[in-house]
Length: 462
Image 1: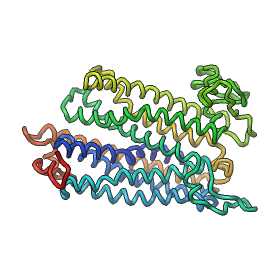
Image 2: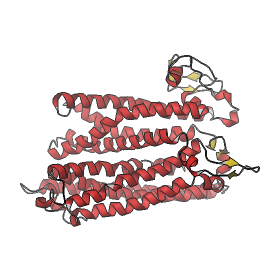
Image 3: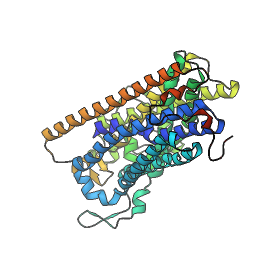
Image 4: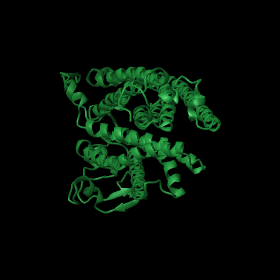
């Protein structure tokens, strides 16, 4: 399950956010009659479709694993929190239809009709994210039920089960995070092109729009990250203690940057900042922070799990802080000179930002899940009670099959992207003078419209 989730989650930012970024570029192209912007939007829509196809494979494996690997959890709690998965399934099918309409509409629909029919795509993606985050937030702060004498959930309140205390902080942190991740990854592709000397408008525009979106959202995400950490402090104090390596409940608690927790409560390595953890949790040094020893050892993460969660959390904070500096660098140059920063080091950092964001996505998942151990449903069901009783040999066989499937899926994904990029490069280099670079892509299902009709159609163009 860890392998499949860690693999699938790399596709999530593009499934949720790439439609919105593509439509922003599409809108710019229609409003300004910009053939380059429309070319970028059209090509991004092809990447969006390929990514969605791979997501079908990885997501389907996950859906089977929920039933096969966690029968104890799904059998007991499925009626309480299963609505989130139902919402995600409906959103998935809706998104598939909308992607098909949008992809094939490049040739067959009037320009503005095509754009407006694509506009629900980001909403469908956000609805899918709503369902999944609602299910995960419920696992962190389960609500909306009572337990009968035998310990089974009854009197289910669907609204309370969906809108749990952690849902709001998790959802907005997730949405902003995947949008800025997709923005930095897409911009990073064109940053590499700019570093290689391709200073044409195609690469500048392909870099500027997604990077601007990501740069605007970066400080917002930093604030949301601080907010969700404080929500964990109030709603899941033991998880907070694990992520911050707090051993005993106390005030004036120091903050450790990295470091390793030991069984006696000591922390080795890392950087110790006196009183900072209490200040971050409650804005004053006298804030009391719950420690891991406030509960029995069987009800809290092990020292290894706490160290893993702590490192994942610190990596997120470190990367987020560096991205804020990068966004400020970009914003300063744009406001001052109305152009990209001239230093090649900026483009190098921008090229690495996407990979760094994908790392933080993985770290966010690790912090959320490992920090909650040993509970799969916080304070209601342990992992040991939820997991399948299948023999170890069968699990290893299943794991081997899943690894092979995922390697083939991601290998196919990368191969298709490389071939598409190569074809586009040839199209750009071979385009005759005065023609749009995409005119040589007529054999593709999303092929271009004649340039003369690109910015015409059914309303609103300038």
